[in-house]
Structures are given as structure tokens and as C-alpha cells.
Length: 187
Ligand SMILES: CC(C)(COP(=O)(O)OP(=O)(O)OC[C@H]1O[C@@H](n2cnc3c(N)ncnc32)[C@H](O)[C@@H]1OP(=O)(O)O)[C@@H](O)C(=O)NCCC(=O)NCCS
Image 1 (tube, helix red, strand yellow):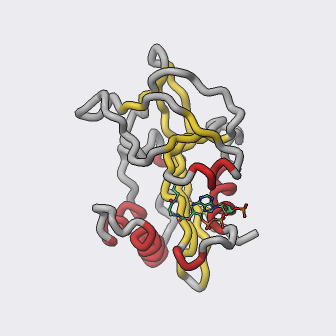
Image 2 (image 1 turned 90 degrees about the vertical axis):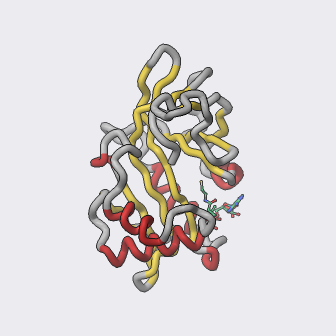
Image 3 (image 1 turned 60 degrees about the horizontal axis):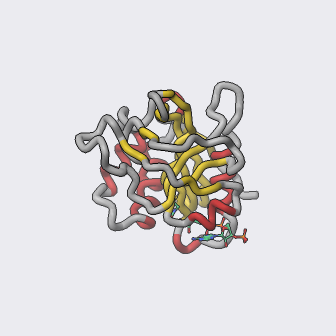
């Protein structure tokens, strides 16, 4: 088991945020976010992403001050059916340094995120998008096929997700049919 450090929203130092930003930049070079924008967003998360910034948790595996693997979670209130509210643990930016893959770092980081699920006062399930469903199926997640929208967006009917697949954890958790309002931008 790799040692995983856990941080609240504003607990990372500027250097640590810079190292995490470099990892994210290496994994997603095509993103429109520059290294500096990423670093700033890690130090001061944009408020529209999560329902309560106090719920933000960042997980990092370090080696000699360099971030090798990373993930971030926060609580989002989504809506389904007749405007019924549901709290989910949003999972985002799960990644491992391209040179360090296949060592179990990504799975360890993701399991650390999922350990929050079901804790007293925390959501009983996690919801996230991904291009790699097989990685998450090994971690007891399952695909869902609802239509997703963001009713706060300019285009209220557009699919807010970028990735092809949407999943929940734990896979056996009840999940509603029908349209889901993500109630904010994708993550
Ligand atoms: C997906 C990612 C985080 C996996 O990281 P990793 O540290 O190499 O993964 P692990 O070594 O912990 O692998 C755990 C298991 O998942 C499997 N796995 C890893 N990547 C996989 C993939 N892309 N597709 C399917 N299975 C995968 C491994 O073979 C391993 O299986 P095993 O337990 O049977 O041996 C990493 O490839 C990555 O950063 N990808 C780019 C960013 C990305 O797509 N992130 C997911 C966003 S939702």
C-alpha cells in the first residue's frame, strides 16, 4: 500500500500545488488550462464546482516532493425525478504519472477516495465520468446510462460530461432511472 496524503481545499503549499499541477498537465496536455491556471485552481478551487468547499479532499502520493498520483473529491447535490435532491461524492482528476503506471498507485488513490463514501455525514455513493471504465469496474464501480444535463448551464439540455462513460460506486447502490441534473459543470 502506497502512502497517501490527504488535504482539505486550502492545505497544500504553493510548491505542492505546483507539483500536482505539473502532474495534471503531463497527463492532460491538451487541456485548455495552463499550468498556472491549474496551480491557482488547486490553491483556490473555483466555487461553482462543489456544493460545499469544506467537503473538498485532495489525495496525493508523493515521491521526493514530486506528485506521482492524484485524485480530488467533493460533495455535489444533484437532482433527479421531480427535483429530488441527492448528495454524491464527486470524483475527479484521478491520474498517475505516465512513467509510474501499473504499480497500483491509481487503484490505491481511488480506494482512498471511496473510503469516504458512507461515512457519517458523507454521501452513500460516488458519481464520476471516465474514459477507462475497466479500471473502475475492478474497484466495484458500475456504469450508468442516464441522460445527464446541467440545468444551470446556458444550454440546459446539453450533456455536461466530456468523457464517454459515467459510473457510480459502489456498483450495487440503488440508482434512479431518467434524467439527472448535475446541477453544475462536469468535473
Ligand atoms: C487510469 C490510471 C489512473 C491508472 O493508473 P495506474 O496507477 O496505472 O493503475 P493501477 O496500477 O493502480 O492499476 C490497477 C488495475 O487497473 C488496471 N488498469 C490500469 N489502467 C487501466 C486502463 N486504462 N484500463 C483498464 N484497466 C486498467 C491495471 O491493469 C490493474 O489491474 P490488476 O489489479 O488486475 O492488476 C492511469 O492510467 C492514468 O492516469 N490515466 C490517464 C488519466 C485517466 O484516464 N484517468 C482516469 C480519469 S477518470
